[in-house]
Length: 285
Image 1 (tube, rainbow, N blue to C red):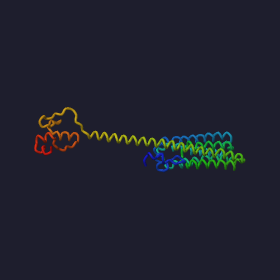
Image 2: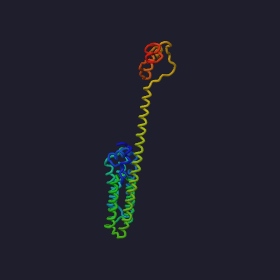
Image 3: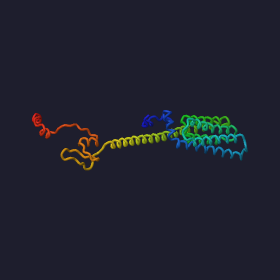
Image 4: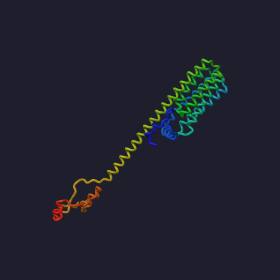
C-alpha cells in the first residue's frame, strides 16, 4: 500500500491503522521507542505493589495477601523487563499487557474482599489505574477499553459486595468511573493518532528522499553516458579529418559520433550541389 494513504486508513474511534498487518508494521518500525513507556510503567507498578505490601506488614503483619502482592509485583516487573528486552515487536505483546491489566484490579478486589482497603482507596486506585491504562500502557485500544471497563465494573461490584456502599456512594462511583473512562478513551485515541501520523510523515519523507535519490542517480547515469567535446581539435584544412587522442586521423562524422552518440545522415548543401552537380542544381532552381 502507498504510504501516502496511511492517514486515511486510521480507525475513527481507536486511532489505530485499520488493517492489522499495517498496524503491526508500525509497531515493528517504532518498537524501540514504543516499548519504553509500557515497560517502565509495569516495572514502576511492580515496585509500588511491593512497597505497599511491605508497608502493610506494619499494620497486619505477614499474611497470605502479602504473598499475593509479591506475586503480582513479580509478574508486573518481569513483564516490564521482558518487554523492554524484546528486540522487536511480538504478537503476544497485547495479551501480555492485558494479563497485567486484569491482574492488578483483581488484586485490589481481593484486598477489598479481605477488608484491607476502604472505599476511598478502592476508588482512588481504580481511577488512577484507569488513567494509567489509557495513557501509558499503549495496548490495543479494544483490549485497554475492555480491561478498564471491567475494572470499573469490578470496582462497583466490590464496593457493593464487600464494602457495603450506599446508593449515594454507588452513584458517586458511576459519576467518577464513566467520564474517566470516556476521557481515557479520547486520550488514547489522540495518542494513537499522533504516533501514527508522525510515523506516516516519516515514511512519506523517507519515500520522497528515496525517489529523489533515485532521480539523482538516473541523472548522474545519463550524464555519465553523454560524452562531450571540449578543448582544441586538430582538424585537416583540406579533408576536415580530425586527429584523435591516439594520434590517428578520423573522419569528422566518426569522431563526433564516438564522443556524443549523435547519428549522421548525409545530404548536400545548395552551394556544393551547384559546384558539383550544376545540372541538377539548375533543375531544382
